[in-house]
Image 1 (spheres, helix red, strand yellow):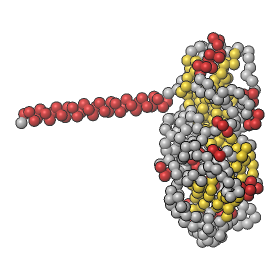
Image 2 (image 1 turned 135 degrees about the horizontal axis):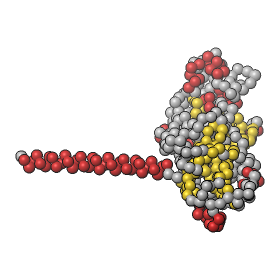
Image 3 (image 1 turned 90 degrees about the vertical axis):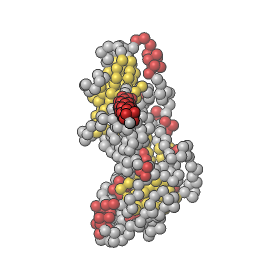
Length: 429
């Protein structure tokens, strides 16, 4: 009996020790992860351009390397399916629509702080809203229905029984079968309509109708002045304001409007449905300019600006290591002026300002913005820096948008809504 009691005491002690050991290990792992996530990163000497060359533009798809062959003679983009207002566009129809060329940044929702899964291109595109209005049985101007900037008229039409639309059921089995939207639809239901985009590879995503009706929503068919490359969505892809890339499918085949709560391929796996871009900024390059009396070249001399075609011959490698750059600079490091460059992106808002810190984020200095500031497109920036002494420094960058809202500085992982945090890099001068 005494032996059993002693054995029980030893077991309890051993259990407490194991619990404490596991707790200490878990706490240590958490702090190690926090340190790793917030640590200064190695500087990637990227070329800072306003427009990203097609060859350097990031690619993401549900099937690695997917590049479908599309016959333009038979390709059609279907809108809505089998309702009275359903219609199809051929490639020639799409090209014949009024279009514009606009800069637009894409960023993957999984892009980490300082990551490379972001790019800015010039897209040739047609407005999406008039096509959705046609599907709803409305007109953009001069008649009943909603215009490109507002969904209020659609709710009025619905209450009056003037709105007419329907949605095809999907054969893929990946999403619920949409229910039709027809005459006499209650006005309140118009608030819950969604636009569903379906792609050739089985990918799909959806957004509230008001997002599809935004004046900055488009169907793109050219990228940087060229026909949309196969790997980037040929023959057509969606451009939506303020959203991560997963909401803007490539290889479009069908667009629907539904009253069902349809999510999307990645949304059904737990990723954000709203998918609103979180502000980001990134340090891309740090170069020594030389003696104090030297002056930097104009921003356009190093790939800034918005004229892609004159930048194709830029022979600077896309990335070199800090060590290679330092070796090229010789033994004179630590003197003169250094130029720090990068990008900032605020989603649906234009970039308002960019700030740099070189002293552990105690003080911040405003950078020069070296390209135009537009909603839905990144802005390039530059800061001239004269280190007080040779040695190691940690540079940090943050941005705020045109409304004054500041980039979140706390670190979060990318799942489920996109990463946040300050990009920091280590440099030697």
